[in-house]
Length: 229
Ligand SMILES: O=C1C[C@@](O)(C(=O)O)C[C@@H](O)[C@@H]1O
Image (cartoon, rainbow, N blue to C red; front, side, top):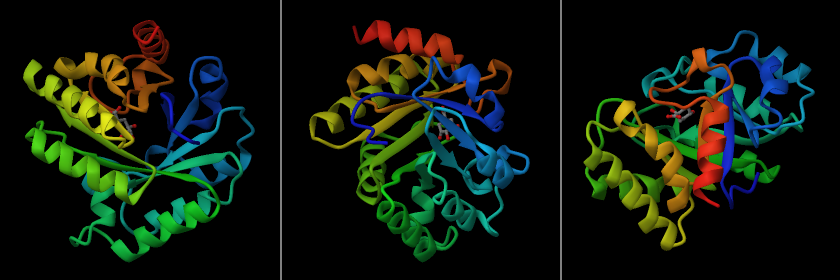
């Protein structure tokens, strides 16, 4: 998956939902960390949409314990439908969160088989200053094909800061995906693509959102398409 233009990911822990996303999304984000029998689901997958596989660590707001977490992502690379994997910036940085060598080997293994890597970083409490948004996105994009940040907007200024950094880095040729979580940040999910954000996430089942403030899939598709006309 090249991520050189906007890609709408339908997030789900149930690959059986792919037919419902097929005509709307560009790929399925498979939340392995929230899924039951994820290996069996991957083996049985015969949908049309390529998969972006995420196995979010508990320490990054997800459901996966460290034990076997990166190995499961490595095993996912063997499936033809997998076009991208998501790896946390914290896992790649050598700062004691998990095994940085294993995370870096995983990124190399993905690139060897032409699977793109989305390097992601989150803040579930607040929006860091613009300098930190910039720094984290730059570091993330150096490790992988796209640097992604999802932060929590507490006010419109936070949302504006996310949009502004998105614009600045896109203009500088850095491939980023950005969004502000929470009600105040919702609109950034529709607007950030106008400023260059390359990935948007929305749940296949609106009752199973994978982050606060997400639009449902059809709504995000419509908003992004209308705003980029
Ligand atoms: O990291 C992200 C972004 C996200 O948290 C969001 O805010 O839409 C949703 C997650 O499923 C995905 O892995």
